[in-house]
Image (cartoon, rainbow, N blue to C red; front, top):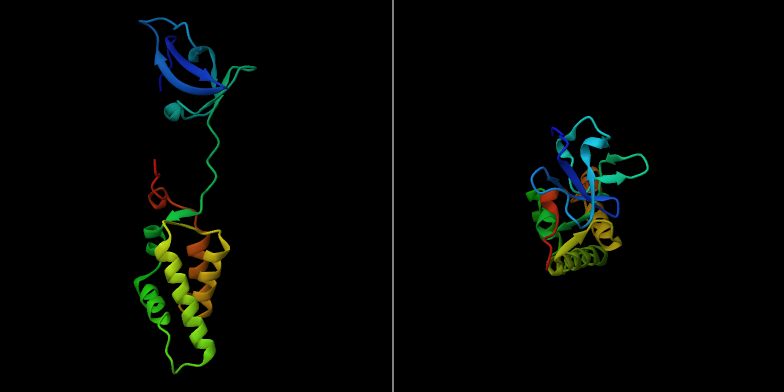
Length: 168
């Protein structure tokens, strides 16, 4: 981004709201406008400079916004996509209670069935919730998932395409 003397940043609570070329209109009577040419942008790459950047009036510098905290809340489809097809099929089969199985196997099948009901009713999955972690542990103990696969499913932060849709 080439910075000329007519480029100004509108600042609100030390956060850049917008950047404008004020060479034609002049500086508006509202808000705090800072001439970018008289400031220091603390990065070697100014192509991302814009709204969200932080302005420090004490030393007239602009710094990039902090990286957002990773989230572990994903859509239900994203959660299912973290499983291999064979793992999903094995989970469905393991949820079927066989009346001739011993009590421990019947309980395990019922627990997997409860997990699938929980999954079906959820609109999004929080990978940090104990219920989610316990369900993945159950699938690991059942031999459906390896510990490595369980770790990958639970410990990978949400990718942008995995985020649940915002409801307005």
